[in-house]
Image (cartoon, rainbow, N blue to C red):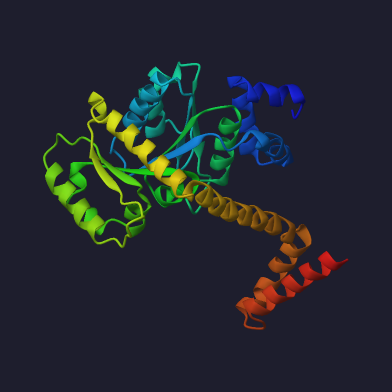
Length: 319
C-alpha cells in the first residue's frame, strides 16, 4: 500500500487514494506510521480552521457556506467532521453531511467523518493525521468541525491555525457560565442566527468577557461577528476575519511558533503512546494482574507494584 504509485495518487488528489489513506490511519497499524512518514514532505501548506461551539449553533451550515466561498476563490477545501462516538451511528453527524452534500459533490472538496475514539481531548490524534493526508494532497483549506461536546471544542485549538467559536443568541444567558477554556480558545466569535431575539444580550455578554482579558498592543483581540449562515449572511466577513488573523500570525511570526508548539505536544503524545505500548507487553500486564489481590489485601501498595513494573521495564531496555 506504500507503493510510489499510491503516494503519487494522494499527491494528485485522487479521492479514492485519500479515503484509503485515512482508513489506513484510522486502523493505527504500522502501515499508517510509514504512510505518514512518506507524506510529510508535502505537509505544511494548508491553512487549518477549527469551527466549534455548542450543538445546534449551525456549525455545519456555516462550514458549508465557507466552503462554497473558498471554492469561488478556486481553493481546495477538506472538511473533517469530528463525531464523539462513531461516524456510522446514523445520528446528527450524518444529517450534517446531508446538509453539506451540495459541496460534497465538488471534485475539489473532500468531506470525512471521524470518531474521537474516546480521546480525552475530544480530537483523536488520528484526526490530525487525517488532516495531514489532506494537506499532502494539496488542499488549501482544512476545516475541523466538532460537535461541541466534551473536550473536543478545546482540543481543536491544538490542531487549527484559526479557531472559530460559534454561538447563538440563546447562549447569551449562559455565556458567563461557559467553560473558560471555550471562551479562551476563540480567535474570534461568530454569533450565528443573529436575527433571533437575544442577539444584543449575547453580544454584550461576549464583549464584557473580552474586555476582561489581558492584552497588549501587539496581542490579538478576538472580534465578534454576526451571521445568519442559513441565509449566507456574514460569510464574507468571516472569511475576511480568518484572513486578517492569518496575516496577524504571519506578520508576528506566530504561525510558525504556534505550529512548532503544537508539533512539540504532538511528538510527546506519539512518544508516550509508543512507550505505553512497549511497557504493557504481555509479561508486565500479567504481572500487574497477579499483584492486584495483594494490593486489595493490604500486603503491598500500588506504588510498590508500579515501581517494580517500572524497574522491570528499565532492566529490559538495558538488555
